[in-house]
Image (cartoon, rainbow, N blue to C red; front, side, top):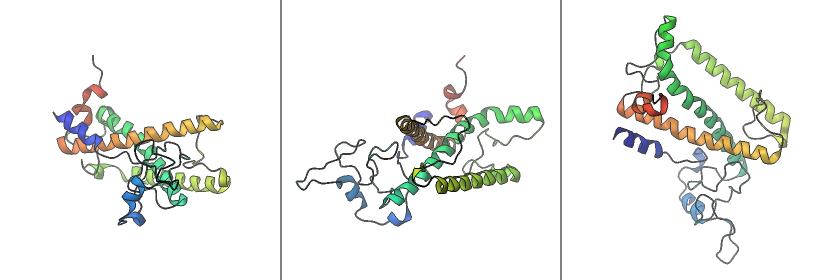
Length: 237
């Protein structure tokens, strides 16, 4: 029963491609325009339909140019122009990457933080229930200030490098490019590049929903996610 409720919570957040812009809040025509607008041929028929919702036209800005674009943005979070769209996509990519790291680190911390801390003679950073520290779980105050300093420094380095790469590459700049690919995963071929970027954004969206599920599940049941759903995180035998 608990797992069913948690799973429902996991599926609640919409798999939106973009985060909201304050300039779009309060628009009365946004929903109608994006759900039922689109390019019209003058005879009442639409030229392009949404891949996500084939029975409605796609939003005008979502023309398939960006990886992972399936024409789904019913609340016009992408904004009113290409500049806003690209800004939101870059924000989505950054949040996706953070979520992919976090969704792996969250259960790993719950599984190994205490054993490693005990072995090193250090206090565990997990909560009393064994959950990862978070805003809802508490425990963030126990994290050393040096950790936060490193996090802020790394974030700043990534942002600076991203800005430098954008200026250097100009029109050839790809959204989310922070000039970091030490293992050479990003292919040179354009078709393979698009496929790689599509995989990244899809995995990132899934990670954002999964991480939301972790947070909600632990906030409701007050036990670690690895204990609530052990078959995902522990050997079956």
